[in-house]
Image 1 (spheres, rainbow, N blue to C red):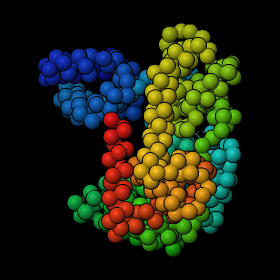
Image 2: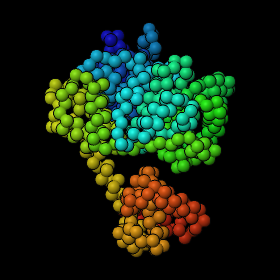
Image 3: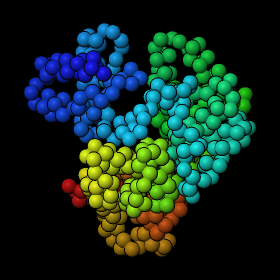
Image 4: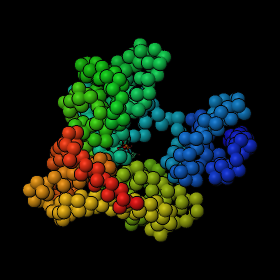
Length: 454
Ligand SMILES: Nc1ncnc2c1ncn2[C@@H]1O[C@H](COP(=O)(O)OP(=O)(O)OP(=O)(O)O)[C@@H](O)[C@H]1O
């Protein structure tokens, strides 16, 4: 470790010479010493997500370049992480896990399995079907399409399928790739004219796991290439698993020959876990992240789960933060200490939630104002066009501005279902293409919304 600590000090002094005092103070002086070296990376802790993201976007290239000119013994790269991220990889209270063993062939993350996927109402069907697909790849459902909001376990379930198949048959060639990486690979292939390699790689797989397919929207050439791969593999009954943030029918700018193929497979969704389910997830995480902390008060878990209620990634992050805070400060874990550890996160969440909810309200009240009807009627049951037109416009504006799920929008309008909201948004979108009067109305409403937002 000593050599990496020395290297980091040398890199810091080069950065000090290169950047102004202001930048150095703001960004680099707040970074920790080297925390560990693993998998070719030197880990340094950034004080907050903002600094971490600035370093990654603006300074990481230079840092690694300086390091490579100073340290010639081996290729090393720096990784800047938040303290709570490090605890996920290096348990502070348990033995260090070996990062090199985390990933297996085909970019599968070996830690994401069916065993540590906690099942509840929101994901039971998806889980059961995923097990079936993993048991008989290429037979039960092809493609197997998992959708749901951010951070709810789609990638976990997809990788669990891959790991399960790999565990049962080592000859199976399994490949996990994010759609964004597929786009990049395809572009590189065009640039370097390595189509044979590309084809060989993708046509040779038995199981293709493609994550976040919505990222392919607006990339028609990549979609065309993916379509060819898709067709080739499915014709040979090779299993394809896809994840997305929305159902196939709602994917925007993805060619219909792809979306219709997706719909021919099995679509399952993962919803938001309820409180009991979230507490179970936290319990499970504790057994792996911090096996020594086994007597954590249920009230503390419920406290964390009650605040972090929409995204399992954030829920996990909150638990790690509490553990890190209490372990490094050598204090007991209780509701009071958890509150201290999570104080800033909870405040930000409250502010964002309040702002967003207010914004939906604002759209509803500006639209009802414009059409001289009450908000009560806007979200109510009356079906006269005097009410339905403004209602549809308000739904369309919320969808367009915040891109939240149709189901969520429905809940803001007297619990209307997904298909009603979808139809309303499509209708307004089509009307706006040729109905000038409506266009003027929508523009005016938008201006009013902007005015009230400032
Ligand atoms: N049911 C669950 N049981 C255990 N862990 C879970 C569960 N659901 C999600 N997680 C964990 O939450 C984190 C986020 O999950 P994952 O990355 O699979 O979400 P995602 O839906 O793919 O998100 P994104 O839309 O951002 O790609 C992961 O660490 C995952 O292990």
